[in-house]
Image 1 (cartoon, rainbow, N blue to C red):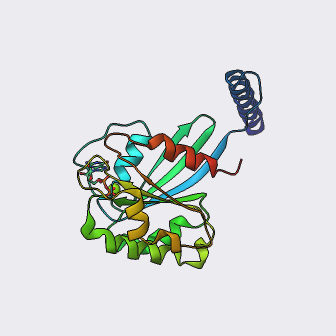
Image 2: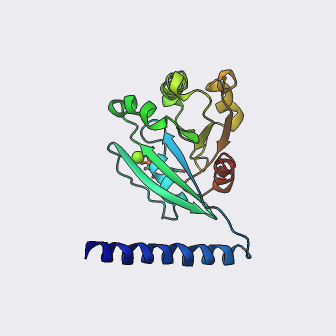
Image 3: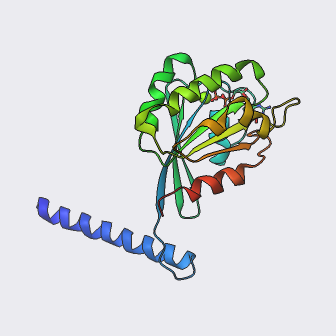
Length: 200
Ligand code: GDP
Ligand code: MG
């Protein structure tokens, strides 16, 4: 009897696969498209805007008061046939030792900085240096985002590159963009950069 239910279950699974594959090939104009998943880890000090950015990328609303992330928060962001599996890691000092573990083997690391908070820039730079010095993370592409570009007196991208000495980071691809999670500025460029790093 158990075998009977098992074969019905297998048949149903096959049907779902078939219907799903037909739907995806129709939506892509008849071409069969392979879905791609990629892992992205978002790190940075507390208050940089990681959770806000992830919420907005996933299609949610920006909110002014956001609750500090305890541990981590995860979301899937679907863009075309690419699914970004994003880990947003807590930025308080007690969570920083776990950044390296969650960055291992990912397609890209996104490091978020509050570009309006000059006081925390040294701490943010030190944490980034520490992270990229880990041998386990060698070669993983790094995207540094200067967030909160909507605020007055923010650091420009060039200033951020200089202040964080990003040009001295070697053995990996490094890019830096200015964004605003609040005003959704430059988020398309962020998604394009990420998707271009998937293993398609
Ligand atoms: P996290 O600790 O890195 O996850 O940071 P949150 O996403 O919790 O954001 C911290 C604070 O910064 C919250 O009050 C957000 O509303 C605010 N914030 C995040 N992104 C932006 C932005 O682009 N512009 C402005 N003005 N505020 C932002
Ligand atoms: Mg958070």
